[in-house]
Length: 476
Image (cartoon, rainbow, N blue to C red; front, side, top):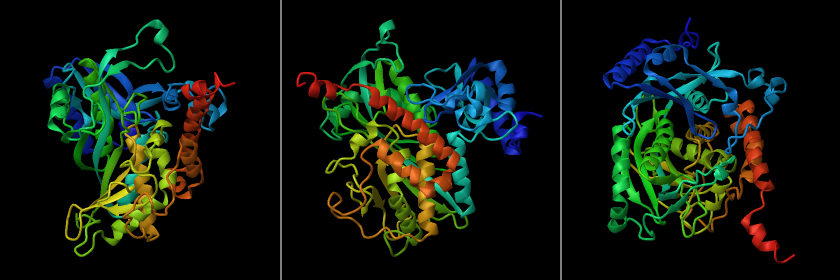
């Protein structure tokens, strides 16, 4: 029996998708196929197989070490895998043992910038067919299943800001290697502060057109390309998708953008606030709504009100649990530098009608079938599976308890409301106490995530910063 059979996945639909992936691979005369999975940080990892090995991989997967799921953002293994239970009470983690990445044939794509290469996104399983509980794509899939049981589908659209620089020096000397290594030296593509001006867009058009062509050829649902406010800052938006699709789009978009940019002499960064003079913070605004599975109608739309009762309760859940959910929407230490008043970024858990200073912005209105919520809290480095899963968990709690979001905030930086966390440590503390997110994502996963991110904080606090050197070296 193959792994795909042991996992209960060998359905007629999957068989058809497998045949189609194999047909496209042969028709494209591809010599290799990249198999990728999203790690705990939403970074794609994986292996590249020669074409003759792909058929076996589609049925039995490809093994890799569990330590890939136990690393912080410097790629250091956080958990003591040589101890009993892998240091985390899980026998399967001991000794850096293997798990299996199983390709999802419905995700097959040809890579336009590497035409000899196919690509497939993978889910992670144990060899006996059990889903690996630390696989973040599986976490979102379980959350979507809970939502389906309540009679709804999750719909999301992406609005992503990031920086695009000219690569000046890649820092590949032996002394530059490290864990992590030295970042590259870059220069600006424009001076910025001319928001949406055509001249600034045209300055960036050569690389933007290369990105656009490749992303569209990749099959991503790209809508717009815009010049953002800051120097060398851009924003891409994507059409709405349902279920796993928006999260899959985000991980592939980030990885593809960085690869395409690098091949053409540029550097793309989804870091929220790079330490470069005059640059601005980047956010990831997640547009979301629910579709009623029986009527196929937008569950947030209402003929007479700005937002339906379902939408109001869902939004109230987002606000109620915003501090704890920030650990997933803003998972880096750097991301909390963005929560500043009077900055077009939120600093507290409030909502408003078409107001860019609030955390949740309501778009649409009475009779508008496209009515939805825009959560402006996220950073572009967030793991999309965990970001979206946390939104669903919080929104469902608001629906189940019929929570009230309160009145619209017309003065977003003066309205009394719970402040968003000022640091990753503060967000993790809120997550640790959140019974709703623990119930929705599971105690095991939440405790794993807390430990992983705490290791990142601990490493940061051991470093001597530029600020400390300037503040104390001459004074004392």
